[in-house]
Image (tube, rainbow, N blue to C red; front, side):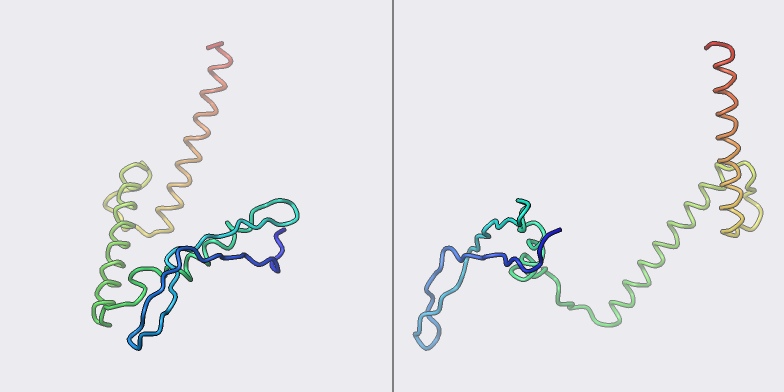
Length: 139
């Protein structure tokens, strides 16, 4: 278990002196080197905290949304439509593959899943039967 009290030391490298509008030099860090501190067992603490530090130092691009509410809604509707179409096409494939499912009957999710599960069980039983037969015949 890693101790949460062990601090991760950050050392600034490549410090530049920049001048603000009033002529006073300002320091900015262009590179940060992480000291690889280790816990009592010798495990590196840098991996655990690295993701948080990266988020703090390099915020995600596009984290500020420039989309209007209408655009967000349209994107959401489009995503949901794609998701539903993918589910529908997957059910269509199941109907094609499972002999107990009829393409003409109404496809309730429960019925499709139940009949598919039953078909898989039948296939497994048939495979077991064939394996036993194979062993009996010495093949």
